[in-house]
Image (cartoon, rainbow, N blue to C red; front, side, top):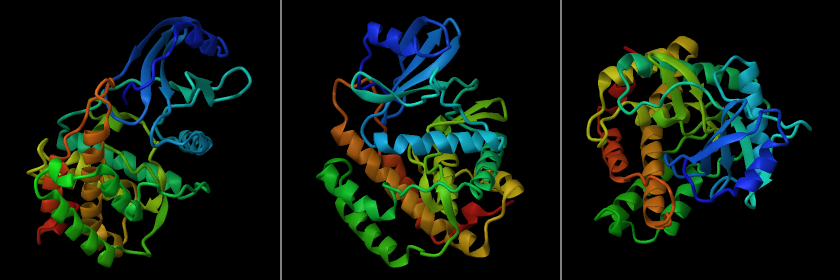
Amino acid sequence: MAVYTGVEPDDLAALVGRYDIGTVLSCKGIAEGVENSNFLLETTGGRFILTLYEKRVRAGDLPFFVDLLDHLAASGCAVPAMIRDRTGTAIQQISARAACIIQFLPGISLTRPTPAQCDAAGAALGAMHRALQTYSGTRANSMGHRHWRAVAEATGDLDAVVPGLQAIVADEFAWLDANWPATLPAHVIHADLFPDNVLMLGERVTGLIDFYFAATDFRAYDVAVTHAAWTFSHDGLRCDKARAHALMRGYAREISLSDAEMAALPLLARGAALRFLLTRAHDWVHTPADALVTRKDPAPFLNRLRRYQADDAASLFAVA
């Protein structure tokens, strides 16, 4: 979440007036994240999230996201509803941006999850994957394996971000291109299930949010992304095996990966680490100086990449 585009009070009042959610009391920008402009909207009818779609989210993809959340909610997954106005419309326009008003869910995002919280997150991911096995929608992954080179090229001089990064990335591209799997089970995945996209109260997941990278890809890749996001120290230098094993244990309670998927996890995790290394490097270079946004350091994902390259990387994915 972030704020790139402001909202005029009169425009906001007109937008909220289309809904049965009361009148505006306050609307405050949310600085976390880097993708869209987000506001905590409080009305006489309650709290909501107002999202204006920017950057990598195309307006043409929004019906897919609305339909996806409807499917997950109907399947019992803890996801926020896209609020409809009186005409049944979820996708609006404000400040020359496509926008949605979204249900506010209770809970907080974690910065240092415990093993028990990792277990709960793994179970929520597994339950979501079970629900998505019956989802008929598809969306090409615009941030998938074959798109990472374009991100690197658009970033510019990677060595200016981290010395020596250009050669490291080139070597990793060559290895991943030679080894990336082709036939693992696939369906729509979240693809960005970091702790800041999971709301929790204690050890209970209350919400999975921010599905704007959701796309059709390997479900095991989604596990690898979540593993990279939840199980490492803040600097990415150490993978906490207690947290890693708890995450995998929680996932396995809900759905089982095949032997081929388990064998591919270290490779897919290398891809996940490279993907977030590159997108964070890009945003580090290109985020506007006046944007209300928290830039994220790419270096911890270089450290994760090195850990996943180690000979014993498979041990990090054991269900113990």
